[in-house]
Amino acid sequence: MTAGPAALLVLEDGTTFRGTGYGADGETFGEAVFNTGMTGYQETLTDPSYCRQIVAMTAPHIGNTGINDEDNESRAIWVSGFVIRDASPIASSWRSARTLDEELAAAGITAIAITGTRALTLHLRERGAMRAAISTTATDAGELLERVLASPSMIGADLARVVSTSEPYVVTPPAGTAVRYRVAAVDLGIKAATPLAMARLGCQVHVLPASSTAEQILATDPDGVFFSNGPGDPAACGYAVTAMREVLAARVPVFGICLGSQVLGLALGLDTYKLRFGHRGVNQPVQDRRTAKVHITSHNHGFAVAMPPAGAAPAFDTDFGPAQVTHVNLNDGVLEGLALTDRPAFAVQYHPEAAPGPHDARGLFGEFCALMDRSRKPGQGPGRGAAA
Image (cartoon, rainbow, N blue to C red; front, side, top):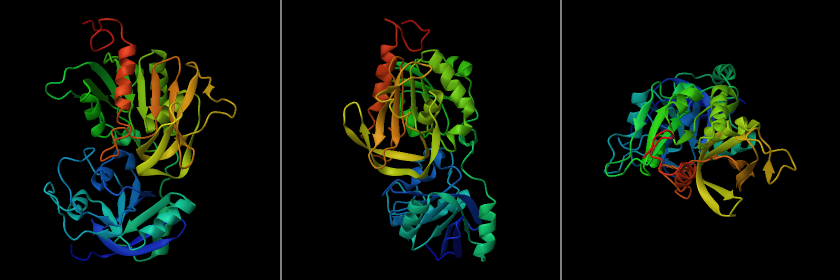
């Protein structure tokens, strides 16, 4: 890689890092966050949950394995900008089709290489995620700061409809795998690995736009409904909360992850709030309160569901019967899982499909299938209205 142009990274509190431009020349604005994964930069770039965020990678060497044509999690790169420490001068992998620098440049994504990614991460941990800009064209940090302060906040941002599919589509089980379930998946920012994981278990997955109504969701005649991960403020997704409540009222099995978990929390009457710096990476320890078992999990979220009122443990009342907190994060005690006790609905704040890993939580898709099995009538085939 040849040396790039001089570049600036300016945070909304005025903190400035100078480095070398990478990817596309220009400038970009977004919320500065950090990812603690040692691998998976291609999956990170193409994860819709990173929409409107400038992502700093804490691993020191990025780009080593280049970019391939198999591991993208969506149709586009969604990060607003990218921050790395050392850009690998070569891409060494038998699957590599092009370099990371080439991929970012082709997608128009402005990135920066700085020696201070550790200092940046510590700063964001202490002060919290904040608005920022990367520029290879601006030379005045003060002028760039003024524009950072004029950029939109993540609070109140409805981004699920920005990244969602505009038209429904279907993911079918691989050849040789019978269709056992029909699942309606509400795409709030779904990753490609998620419907594939369900399809391998015999699910015919009907992926629907984020703004789909409960009537449209239930019109697919699903055995179960899945609400996906996604970006932005869950409090801005009132349309998804309404759909969730109506699906719960229909007593169709429900499984939600990440933003889908927050939507379930709001549907059950809990609040959501913005975390100081969020959970992003592949090394978050989560404990299942029901078994005391700990899973190492993949996360990407800046908001969380607030715990039920004090004294509500182990269960709290909702419009849909009693519910319980099933999982907590062992790093900071954040709520990581919810379940209704009298209806077939549960959700977790993390990613069971977890590309590139870890895979401790992969069995949750099996739990969803078991929930759909228990909700079936004897002899019923795929679809709640279909008979075998």
